[in-house]
Length: 361
Image 1 (tube, one colour):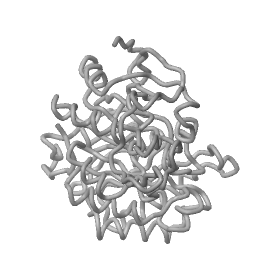
Image 2 (tube, rainbow, N blue to C red):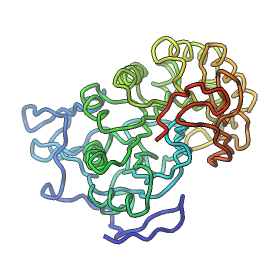
Image 3 (tube, rainbow, N blue to C red):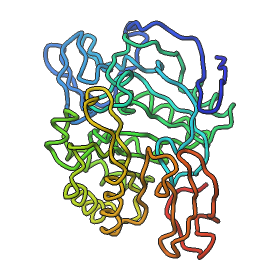
Image 4 (cartoon, rainbow, N blue to C red):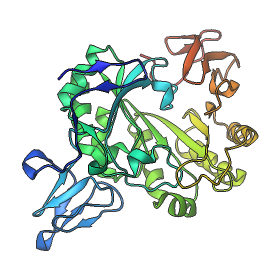
């Protein structure tokens, strides 16, 4: 299948399809579900564990019960295929400066009121145009354009788990790296099966209270924390993003509790990104995050001993760069998504030889 590369950071085009549900013969049977009586099934992919009647779909809109079998309706039907820098994820300690093939399908298993990609995440397959790519074609195109990795992003990757998994397996066979940008709201079994074919994971830790998760995201915090623990235990590269939303999760006591939990359970070397909120979706009545709030969050994290703390969505801010915790010198100079200067040699500070955690090759 031919692709037309527009620009780096632009899009790749293919045969575009109208959003129509295919017959079961054209769908991919879902992983992680069990059959129940009366042709019902129970999905076991995420903590919702939806019980789905015949002809119905689960909360994520992507898994459909057809006569007692659960199918992924989005397999091979990405809504977006484009190219962008890994810094946009943001993942900062994973081969800085490389470009990735970005993939996503429709929908999500959360309902975040602040979602910046709501036009994708809050839509079903039928509500969006989509492309038609097999996993093999995705890898061929990534290799053709000499991209450094395949990244699953923009919406929640786990709601197209089978497609994500198959692409990642083939990528690993071809020596290509993979990453996901995820909300972490997934059951332990599926997560543990997926991690061996991933090289990096960025988790959006959206707040640090069950109340915030319930009211703003229609979800729960604990499964996300469990995911973070598992990712760390399995030694897959992990970075965390916290979007700081005025009046909702910007309380410094909550941020302190989050940072203390990260230090105790994940470790001080795990990068933490505080990202600036801009009004979006159902939260257009809130103001952008004041930069001073982000700087206070940064200081809170550093006071908790976290070594690699960043401020994002503020182009040109000095805390968008990486500094050596030993000598204090800037070792990766960033301006938003651009790498201006690299002072790393074999994963070590060029100035003092201090080892910097990450995946550098």
